Amino acid sequence: MPLLLREDDVARVLQMDRVIAAVEEAFRQLGSQQAINRPRQRSTTAGGTILNVMSAAIPPLQVMGLKAYTSARGETRFIGMLYSTDTGELLAIIEANRLGQMRTGAASAVATKYMARPEAGSVGIIGTGWQARSQILAISRVRPVALVKCHSREARHREAFAEEMVAELAAEVVPVETAADAVDGVDMIVTATTASDPVLRGEWLRPGVHINAIGSNWANRRELDADAVKRTDRVAV
Image (tube, rainbow, N blue to C red; front, side, top):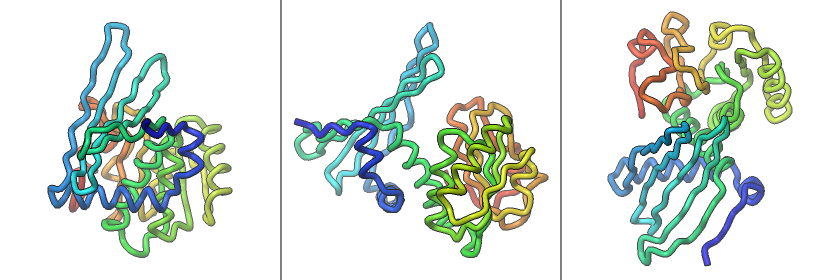
């Protein structure tokens, strides 16, 4: 019988440092062409419900699997399935809302570890929703974060986020009124929004800043304007 992990189980056993290490190893396997990663596939019903499926395999670790999630009526639900590449056996079924949140944060942490300046200690984050929390927690594992400036469209959301995060971090967390304020003078920037139009403009960027842009996963959405992209020295996808 496969192992069944509910959301409460995942929250209890998963630790950010272990997730970061696992994601880094997955990237290493992918970079050495030892892993297989398939792009997201989407199926959309006439009523607007969307099924998203992503699959991958790491033969050296003898595992393969998929993540599937549905988007319907303003809610998103995730599930993960892990298989043995040796026998084809289903090893685990995992409720993956929390898992996906932490994995996304860990991916940003790995990017930050290798691409941000070693002394980088301040973060500006645009967006304070579901993914934002794990972004800051993960980045703080790989850089000495002392200041976080956060912005979202609703003042109550950014204020609640700041209150929550200050209890989690040994850092100052400040809610600010505009996206430009959030990124002014910081060493690292995170965009974690559902915006269709750019929320980060190139004119706001200073040399040496590191950006993790995680929110856009549709071809018709972008969080960075063209000027911001043109100003970058290197891009990792």
